[in-house]
Image (cartoon, rainbow, N blue to C red; front, side, top):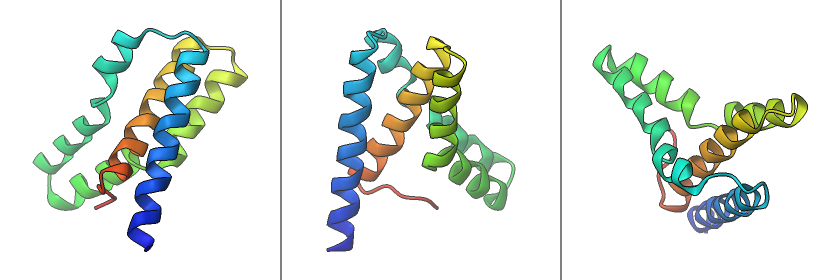
Length: 102
């Protein structure tokens, strides 16, 4: 049951970020290009397993992505807002498909 709830939560986050991204009329090509960008954090595993896990987990928690969204809103920066929404969408998509923190 918990696993199903996490999948649903990820779906809801993903759908909400898609809605907000469209609401602000951001570029969908940019969305598609950057959607998988947080997975570049897996390159940390080239340093070591410990470093890779830490870097991956930092880049795949909602905290950092939401701070970027809030900074975009606070400073009226469309670029920061778009990047934060894409990042949040990526994390939601991961959770929707069952990928979690390492």
